[in-house]
Picture 1: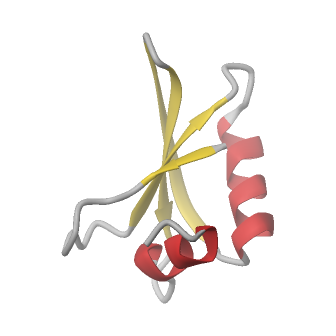
Picture 2 (picture 1 turned 90 degrees about the vertical axis):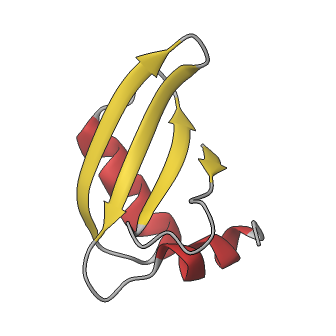
Length: 74
């Protein structure tokens, strides 16, 4: 998975990923929860020319910016 970061000071608490086209919302949710030790509230997906994008909203009490630090993204 490739992470796409939220804009600075954005309070939507979401992480963006490019995922395999065959990945279901359920599989994406389980993978994010296991890899980052967070709870996922909702997963939205869309397919573009660049591939399948997953927008993962974290549950209350979890911070997307803090989770991104685990990736070394900030």
